[in-house]
Length: 213
Image (cartoon, rainbow, N blue to C red):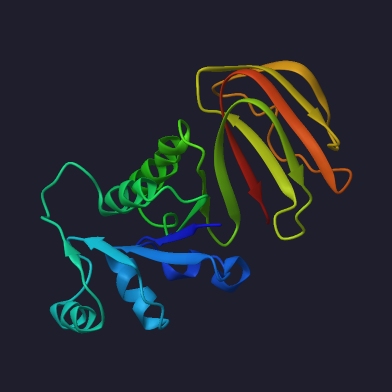
C-alpha cells in the first residue's frame, strides 16, 4: 500500500496525533510552514511546496539545509496546499491524509475541505484529519463504517444541493431512503450501535465527518 501524508501550515494545536496514523507505507509531503514543523519533528518530506511567506528568513535557510524545497511565487492561482495535493494525486497512492489544514483562517479551512473533491474521480481515498475530526467526501453508493472510539460521532452533510436516498443501518438513529438539502441538520451527530454499520445514498455528494468532543 502507498500512503501520502500531507502537512499544511495550520496551527500546531490542531494537529492530530501523527503516531496513530504512522506505518511503514507512509511518505510525507509538506506545504509552506508545514515543511518547518515536519523537519522540526525529524521527519523528512519526499516533496515540499510553498512560497514560504509564513517562515522567517532564518527558518527558510535552515529548511534549505535540511531538504530540497519547491519554492513557488507568492502570486499564483493555487494555494501551497493545493500544489502539494495535486502532486500527491499524480503519484497515485492508495490513501492521502491531510494534516494541519484547519484551525486558522476560515476561508483557508473551507477551501482545504473542498479540495477533498479532487479525489472523487480517482480510486484514491483522501481524508482531512485534525485533533477532533476526520473528514472525507463520497459519491453515491454503499459504504461500511467501523466504530472508532477516538471519533465516535458521525455526521453526514450534503455537499451538493440535494442528496437523496440516504439509508443508515447499524446507527443509533437509523434512516431509510431520506433526502437532505443544504441547511439540514438531520444527519448531524449520529453514533454506531455496533462495531460496524453501513450508509448508502442514491444521488449527490456527501461529506462524512467523524468527530470527538
